[in-house]
Image (cartoon, rainbow, N blue to C red; front, top):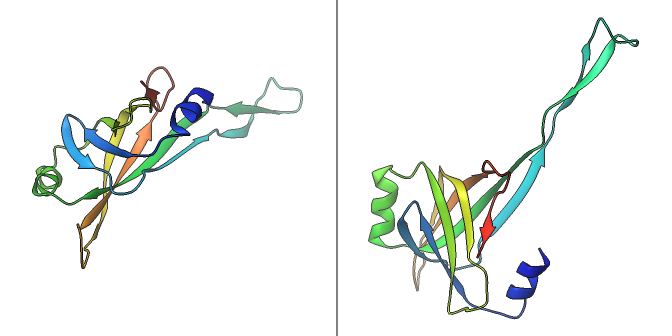
Length: 144
């Protein structure tokens, strides 16, 4: 984590988004990325336990979500309309930042939840939401 903080701390610039091989364009504002985990523990009745109960728990599950605000383009509407967007790899590439990290989310699922924000002046914006899942190695994202 220190390497990511160090490589991005002194840099400003934009990111470009790509999802499942589709270029989504430039982000108009920084992405909102949230990560969390859940673990479930509960008591069950066990005949061979001294107290009569035992605790059962599952492995912690890592998950997250990301919101991207993108300038509206005809290709973006066609992408949403095609419904070929269920899940895939989401990549955020720095534009004009040679030392800042690429962010790659291997298991991202585009949610059917989005907001269209028309502008009186300038570009219209569409906000897309993804659900992030940990891959087989237990990681939500990778940097390069």
